[in-house]
Amino acid sequence: MQTAAPEQRKATRPRADALRNRERIVTAAREMFVELGPGVPLDDIARRAGVGNATVYRNFPDRDALVREVVCSVMDRTADAARRALAETGDAFGALEHFVHTAADERIGALCPMVASTFDANHPDLEAARVRAERLIGEVMERARSAGQLRDDVGIGDLMVAVAQLSRPPAGTGCGNVDRFVHRHLQLFLDGLRAPARSVLPGAAVTMEDLRQA
Image 1 (tube, helix red, strand yellow):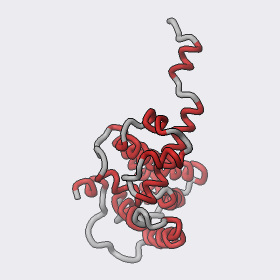
Image 2: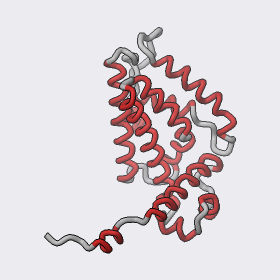
Image 3: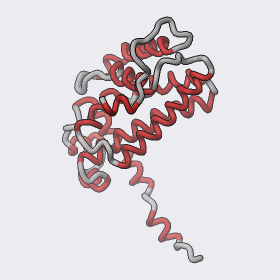
Image 4: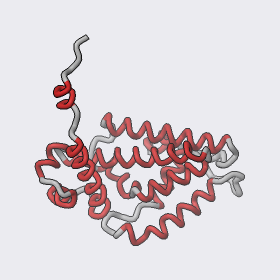
């Protein structure tokens, strides 16, 4: 079987500097979306990223593509944080805690409304990132529940609602100023998830499908 020449293979892969530029754009966009909302000018994002306008549009043909990449990257990083924590320690509840606090650091609460308001929430890239994150967090929760660490009457939907609400200072309010409160309140919430439960919750455990239908 004939293989591609080295120069052909090299041409099919993004160059390292191109990948770094793309990552700088996504990082700058995440920061500015949180600070100013999804309507921030792309030219401003380019300036913060230290790249030219053409570089932004070469990587992301429109605003929706950039917003989608930001949301997908945040979901991937938060889910990976839980996976790594579980692999390193074997402590499922500790991995769950790591996920929650990482999600707050990633400002996932401020970014979540963009999924519903700025682009196609059913885009294949977004759907794939969502499925990966939900599967992994669901597995971590099930392991914590099986180990007797997590109460039986909570679902992944309960977790995601709480994380989004407790870590969501509105865009433009200076998120860094409330970090000390966010992580404190998230830890209080996490302590409420521990088994054995001290009270009976009203209603039933919330699934992600419940949230999508709400």
